[in-house]
View 1 (cartoon, rainbow, N blue to C red):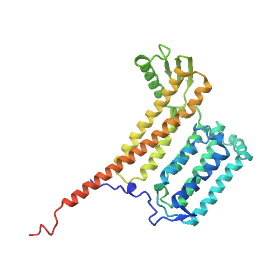
View 2 (tube, rainbow, N blue to C red):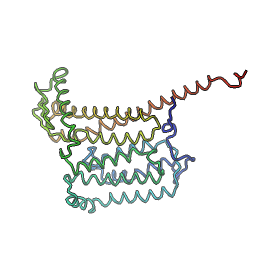
View 3 (cartoon, rainbow, N blue to C red):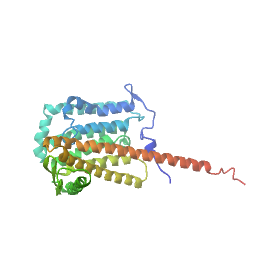
View 4 (tube, rainbow, N blue to C red):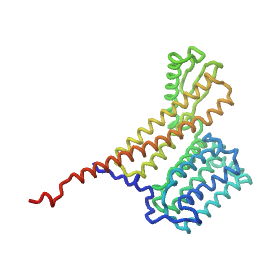
Length: 352
């Protein structure tokens, strides 16, 4: 079987000429610096806003920064200086957006929410940060790398755009108002109830004969520190991580020239893995209330970071595993064809 693995052997698709330097820096380093400049500015200007929770700050910018760095590091690019100067202008404009926020722009965004019938103001305001950064990174990469930009470094842009989409959905369809996303919640909670009871019966005592009861989107826990009840809505069930995974994985698979069947397998395995990570997160949140504390503030602190600290490492490890497997497959395939070529008889030698 013949494989086309150009997406793995040639990372710099669309940039075939020799790499150049921009302002004394290698082109890939220069590209990284200009793409993340607005994020770095926001970190220094508003460090207290970089909460890792998906809807409570700009923590998602850090993961977008990591994606941009990982995809562009080590590439040999040839970027025209004129294009780079245009992106500098765009970057300055985005920095201007962040400068203007505390000077009245954020208040204007909040006041505009009723005109659009927004239900959650906080998600609405954070959404615009991700919209602006997403549009900036997509535009900047298109200018720098051309129409094949998505084959070079699309994960960071897709992550920002996906985060903006999730915040949009949360702003307009909060809690259980979006049934299409809410329907999965009861299944997660029933699985959580079963696993908590399994832990109670076979691993360790959790403080009550019946430590967890799930009914619809309601979960009641009774552990070492008393009762703890919560209503679970689609963002807390990990639906946002499933959306992010789907967008990032699709962008990643677009860059790989491998058979569509294997792409589908990789995507499906990742869906299952992401669903399991979401379940692990819900179980961890339940055990936190059962074993550690029922204090709402402390539980909310753990809840606000649990999703990101579990999902994003999983996503990175899974993507790296796919690259490793396809790289190994490519080496085996090359050895096979090299052996087949060397073992083929020379037509001159077989001539009678």
